[in-house]
Every structure is written in structure tokens, then in C-alpha cells.
Image (tube, rainbow, N blue to C red; front, side, top):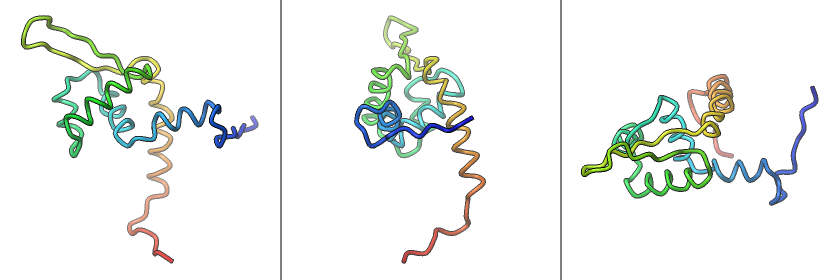
Length: 116
């Protein structure tokens, strides 16, 4: 099987567009968190130390716009129960992200490389 290297420097390249969608560190971490199953906003905040409520909300909205996450209201009356889950498209990121994790483990070092 020949590996096809796309021209990621071209704005119209599908690979470039995918990389731009996942470039935010929070997006990838939200995917990892949601791979465990649907979760409420507060649960995600607890699982993602360092993310602000505002950034998590913005990240979930933009991931919803990109078709990676669904937002469902499970209780219509106050207080509402809103749950976020990965769509099939979002779930399809599990294998590529697992490959990145395997690569990172294989190439982990105990100290950062020295600056030149």
C-alpha cells in the first residue's frame, strides 16, 4: 500500500482542514474525555484541569458545528440536564488518536532536548 502524502500547504486540502479543526489542544482533550461516554459540562470541566468554563463552552459549540459533538437536553425543566457526546464522526478519531499516543509513548524521553 502506497502512502499518499497530501499537499497540506494548500488551503483546500482536506487533511489541512482536518488538522486545523483539531489544532486546539482542548479539542483533542475533549475528544479523549468523551471517548469514555456522554458527559455533562461540569464532568468535562473536572476531567480537563485548566480549562475555563468559557473556553469549554466555546470548544463544545465549535465541535458541535463541525459535527464532532452532540448536545442533548435530557431534562426540559429547571435545572436542565445537558449532556455532550461524540458523534460517529467524533468517535472515528479514536484510532488516529490512539496511534498518536502509541507514537508518543514509543518516543518519550525523560528530558527535553537541549536547545542549540
